[in-house]
Each structure stands twice: as structure tokens, then as C-alpha cells.
Length: 388
Image (cartoon, rainbow, N blue to C red; front, side):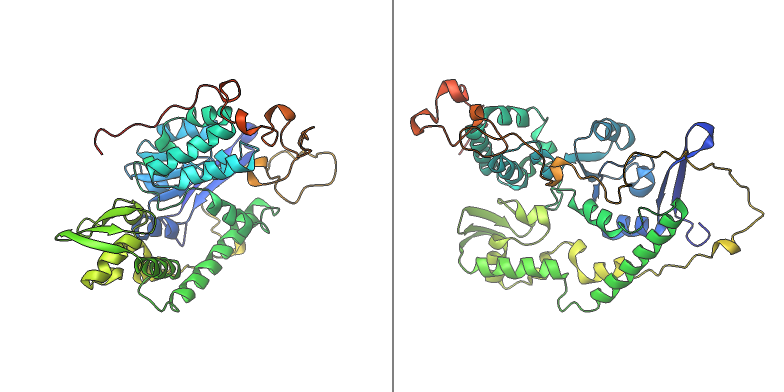
């Protein structure tokens, strides 16, 4: 706090004023997020108290997390303006069938509602119970991008948090004060490396954004288009025909307005009128924004021997030491939803693990595939548009 007045800290103690947990966030990170970063916050099994210091009570943003009960119950109370959405990877991890997992992730990722209902129909064909379980999750806008209320910029999983967990794996077994110091040094190194990388950009946008633009420009060469009015184009692509509005920066495929980068249909229209495609990229992907994000320098902190001695102290006792049987674990225990193989039952018909003969798909005859006794009466139909 002596070197960064915007830092936020909160120490939680239990009975006997013994240490339980410590929340902190750096002032530089808060300032950078509010000014330069996409309005998306990812939470993975963390304590939500204090998030209002980071994003602000009135700030509207996407909060992406798993479906842990404490998070679902805490978000509306602590962050009422947050648009809470669920991680597709955790949702797919609830199912053992690989095809169902794939279809769940594709359903969450697609921006097209027709493709979404097609994937849901495929899930129902494989398992009516899985289809029913997905429909009972809650409103579709909670996990399906095709129905999202606010853009989450293509971020459908909490993998970013796992990257952070891996980055600090060396610090996690240290004492608390050492953890805080080592994590700060780790973050400072990453800021320095990102700052140096930003000086190597050869385009007005970030490296990832440049790759998307190059790819979409290549696909746009195969599109045919017709101008409807000023700034509005009808573009026929490889998969679908779309309407592009360059004035509003939208496309009926929804990729343009969701990602903030011109899609293949928009690139075809931009190329036709001779505009600069970089002018249609959102500010989050610009080189100037990236440089500004990591421009601020970190101020080193003083050593413990130079801490002030005249300040008011809070006596906090260490947590009670508990010893468990066996060798101490050095790695975090990963769950089934994170791709860890677990012991599962073996089907007596096809000898494949993960299901039994009553749910074996390999043993279903073709003429029984759509049997009412096997799959029920069918899934609920998707809403039919009033006009076509």
C-alpha cells in the first residue's frame, strides 16, 4: 500500500483471530482493467467478497464461472449488474459420452440459433436424459452464446484461470507472506515481457487479432456480394448468406459484433469499398491499447527490515496445523470435469468404459434408432419465427 494507494486487501480470520484467507488485488491491475480490457471477469471457485473493488458496483460486465452453488447464489447479491454466464467446459464435464461433451461445447460456442437447436437435437438422439438435464440448467442465455444478452467476446470457458493457476504453481506451497511476495514478482515479470512483446508488433493490432483478420480476408475472396444501400451489403458466403451493416458494424452471423473484429462477410464488403479493415476493429485489440495496458511501471516494495514500526498492528495468529495421513500432496487435485481419467464401469456388450449395456449406443439397431420406447416422444421444438 505504501507504493500503490489503489491496492485492495482484506484478511479474513476465524475463531481466535487465526488466519484463514487473504484477498488482494493490485492497483495497476484495477486501473488497467477499467480502462483497456474487455468487460469479462472469470471466477473459478474463489471467494467473491471484494470484487466490487475491482469492477465497481455499477459496472456492467460478463462474469464467467462454473455452476458452483456459492457462486450462483452470491453473484446476484454482491454484483447485481453482472451478466452471469456458465463455463461450457464444466457443463460438458457432467457427461461421460464424448459425443455429448463435444455437442455441449459446440452448442455453447455457436452464435447461430439454428445450429444451436441442431446440436441439441443431436444430444437428444444420443441421450434424452442429457438433453433434459441441459434444458433444466436455466435460461439459455446463461450458457449459450446464440442467446447471450451481452457479448463475451468468444470466451466460453474458464481456461484463463487454469493458466493463472499453472503460472503460480511454484509459489503455492510457500508460507503466506512468501506467496504474496513471489506472486507479485511473477506478475511484474509478465508485465515486463508483455511490454517488450508489444514493441514487436508489425501491424496496428495484436498478433491474435491480425491472424483473425488475415484468415477472414482469405475466406472473403470466395464470397459474392450485392450492395443494398449505403453501408448495407448482402453477402453470400461458403456456409450462409448474411446481411452486413458497416455503419452499425454488425452482421447477421453475429461474429462481427460479438468478437469486435470484421467477420468474413464484413471483410468482403470492406474490401469492395476499399476501406481499412483495422478501422472496424474494437479498441481492445489495437496495438496502442496493448502498449498502454503494460506501460505503467511497477514500484518495488521495501524489505521487511524497512517496514514502519510506529503503525498500528493487528495481531493475527497462524492457522492450526493439521496433518493428513500419507505423503503431502504438491499438486492440486483435479476433478473429472478437467479431463482427468477416472475409474468407470465397463459395458458388457461393447467392452468400452463409461457406460453400461442399457445405455450402449453401439448396440442399437438402425430400425430402433428413433423408437419412442427408447428415446421418448422427442425434444421440445425450437421456436418458429413469425416471419421468414
